[in-house]
Amino acid sequence: MTDTLTTRSITTEGTNPRSREAKQAERQYRRARGWSPWKSALKHIGLILVGFIMLYPVIWLVVSSLRPTEEIFRNPGLILDSFEVSNYTEGWNTLSEPFGVFLLNSVLIVLGCIVGNLVSCSMAAYAFARLKFSGKRWWFAAMLMTLMLPIHVIIVPQYIMFSQLGFVNTYLPLILPKILATDAFFVFLMVQFIRGIPKELDEAARIDGCGHPRIFGIIILPLMVPALATTAIFTFIWTWNDFFSQLLYLTKPEMYTVPLALRAFMDAQSSTSWGPMFAMSVVSLLPIFLVFLFGQRFLLKGIATTGGK
Amino acid sequence: MSALGELRKLSAGKRPQTAAEKAFTKKDNRRDNKAAYLFLLPWLIGLAVITVGPMLASLALSFTKYNLLQAPTFIGFDNFIRMLSDERLHASLGVTFVYVFVSVPLQLAAALALAALLDRGLRGLAIYRSVYYLPSLLGSSVAIAVLWKQVFGGEGLVNQFIAIFGIEGRSWIADPSTALSTLITLNVWTFGAPMVIFLAGLRQIPVMYQEAAQMDGATKWQRFTKITLPLLTPIIFFNLVLQIIHAFQAFTQAFIVSGGTGGPADSTLFYTLYLYNRGFSNFDMGYASAMAWFLLLIIGVFTAINFWASKYWVNYDD
Image 1 (cartoon, chains in turn red, purple):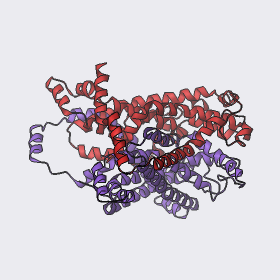
Image 2 (cartoon, chains in turn green, cyan):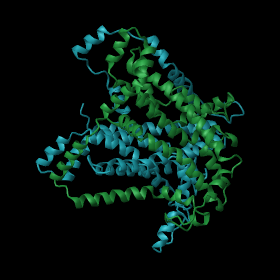
Image 3 (tube, rainbow over the protein chains, first blue to last red):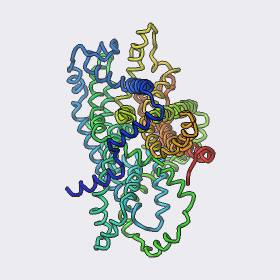
Image 4 (cartoon, rainbow over the protein chains, first blue to last red):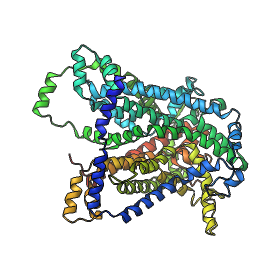
C-alpha cells in the first residue's frame, strides 16, 4: 500500500500536473496575444474533421460487423438499421477451432512475453543504470545498436535453431527471446527511468547493509512501477499484433494466434463471409482498444520519454 | 535523451569530468563486476544466442546453398551474384524505396503539422491526442489490413463514397499502379506515434523564446520557422531515423493485402516479403540470408547518411 503511494507521488512530481488556475491563466494569456474565438472555432472544426476522417474506417468496421454482408458493399454510412449478431456467432465458429481458442493462444503468448520482458529487461536496466563494471560503455552501445537491427538478419538461423530443437509449433520461439531481454527498447526505457530515481535511496539502503539484489528488489522495482506498466502495455500491443514471427513458428491450426486465424479466415473466405470476418476483426482489435483506453497514460509517457531528446 | 542521442554521445567519447566528479568517482571506485554480470546474465545470453550468434550464422549461410534438408554447401559469392540479375529482387527494392521515401516524409509532415496545431492549453487537447494516436496502435494489426483490403477494394468504402459524386472507382488494390499507394496511405495513417514524440519535444521549448520573438513583432509563421522548427530538429532527426528503419522492414500489411504474393504484378512486393518467400516458401535459406545482409547494409547506409547529414541541419545545444 505504501509502495503504491510513494510511486504515485514520484510519478506525478515528474509530470507536473497543471492546475485549473494555471490553465485559466494560460487561456487569458493566449487571449491577450490576439487569440480570437472565430479562429479558434475554425481550428477545432479542422481538428475534429481530421480525427473523424482518421477514425471513420474503424468506426465503419464496427458498424458494418453488425450488418448483413451484402450491406457492407453498399452502405458507406454509419447508421445501423438492423442489429445483426449472426456475423459474430458465424465468425466465431468458421475455422476448425472456435475463435476463443485463438484468443486464448494469443493471451498465453502475450502473458509469457510480458513476464519475460518485465523480469529480464528490468535486471539488465538496473545493471546499466546503477552498477559500475568493466566494459559497460561497450555493452551499452551494443544494446543500443540492437535496437536498430532488422529482425531479418537473425531470423533464418534462429528459425533453423528453433526447428532443430523441435520448438516449431510451440510458443517457446516467441517467448524465449523475451525472457532473454532481446527487446532492447524496454531495457533502454527502464534505464532512462532508473536514472531518474534519486541515488540517495540506494546509498541509504547500502549503508543499512543491503546488497544489490535487495536494493533492486526493495528500492528500485517498487519505484519503477510506471516504467514496468509501460513495458507491459507495449509488450501486450506489439505481441498481440505481431504477425511475422507467429507466421513462421506456428503452422498447426490449433496453435494459431488471433492474427494467424484472421489470415486463415481471409484465405478461406468466399465473397459472402466479409461480415463474419469483419466481426472477428473487431473482436481482435477490442483488447488493444481496451488496453489503450486504460493504459494510455503509460503509453504516452513511454514514447515521450524514450523519444524525447 | 533518446537512444540516438546516447549513441551519439558514446561515439563522441567521454565528456571531460569536473573536479568534483573526479573526486567523487575516485572515492567511489568500487566496481560491481560480479553483481553487474549476474544482473546482465539473461540479456548477455540473449545477445549471444538470439542476436549475435544467428547474425553471424546468417552471414555464413549467405555464402551457401541451403534448403533445411541437406547440409549447406559453400558456393562463395554466388548468392550475391544471383542478386545482381534477379529482376524480382530489383522490383522489390524499387517498391520498398518508393514506400520508404514517400510514406515516411508524408507521415512525419502530418505528425509535425498536427503536433504544432495542438498548442499548449488547447481545449480538448488530450482527446485530440488520443484520437490521432489510436491508429498507430491498430495500424500494424492483421485486422486493419483486412479492413484496408475492403476499403480500397472494387466495391469498397472509398468507391462507395466517390460513387455518391458520380465517380466510378476501380479496385485500388487490384490495380498495380495504385496498390502501393494504399499501403503508403496506411503508413501515413499511423502518424500518431511520431506526433506524440513531437508534442513532448514542443513542450520542452521554453515559452519565453516565443514571447521574446512576439515582442519583436514576429508573426506566428515566423515564430514557427525561426524558433520552433530549429529547436525541434533533434527530434525530427530521431523520428526520421527510426521511421526509415521501421519502414524498410514493413511486412504484415503488404502480406495480407496481397495475400502473401506481393501482387498485383509485384507492385506491393516489399523487400521483406520477397525475402520471406525465398526463405520460407522456397526454402532458399542461403539466398534469403544474403538478402537479409543486403537489407542490413541498405539500412546501415541510410542511417549513416542520416547521421552524416544531421551535422548540417540538426541543432544540438550541447
